[in-house]
Length: 412
Image (cartoon, rainbow, N blue to C red):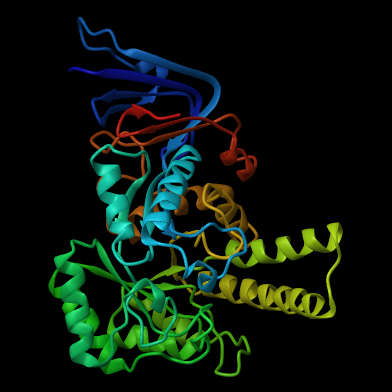
């Protein structure tokens, strides 16, 4: 065995939900994990001289898997319309910066949920070819949306059943990893966040075409009817999964939740992106004050968050499968802080161990890469996060990064 590394830590959490191993160790051969277990059981092959990394007070975990990123975006409060004047070249440069930041924060795999034109695919290729550092990317290229719909400026407008099939075929030609579709509007000013964007017939054509080519479908839905339409069409993941009526009123629907659970459809809640906006306004209130409009907005955002957290708890209790994804880059949520989404999950009826498993193993399964990443197991890619504290005691420890390994390479 060549290119051997040994990583030792005071605690090892394998991502499967198993009890943590005190004084755990990993043996890495090239880009893969060769062995996992207690340090006292580690056996080095005869004649080998592995490079040793010791973290006696650290915790070894699988590299984090973020199921929802937007590398093009700054996460500084900017709207998508604010970026219209930026060239694709500038967006790609920002994406390079964001990818490095996300990797060094401990995210070794990320699902890129929409970038303008081919910038997301160029970033993925650049990372794979070693031009720039970043997580392994699972990319949709650009999301498919109705004319003038949510994120239309990314270049993915399509209408009608034939238009949907053509849009999928074009993205498959460009070698995307999955298909993302906007079943409702969203934060784009010309869209309607509480109304369905596509008919079931249109969405069914898209899902049929995507599945024919072996591509999973992630469906953005910020209204209950959008969720229902996505389920009727057979989407693999509901993104946001906001139970909003057409007038914007949040109203949890237990029958729809039951359908989500029964069909095994993944749900990406994106909790913290809303909290980030609340925290931004609260910070502004302390520093410079808010005008009447901003005070009213902050109050509304808090009410919406409270209602959606209650609904999310009910959704989990109904048996829905949760795939954590940050939505980082959007609005006030910068890249490099996926851990905040996992901390927010613990505000629901989820333990710290469950949050860790969700942000590694479950997230990897939801985006179709669970066979290669998401847990510390022999034969899987050697993606490892080392934290300075014990995240089982407090998930905030996930942000105290001591080291990151991607494909066996020490990247931080």
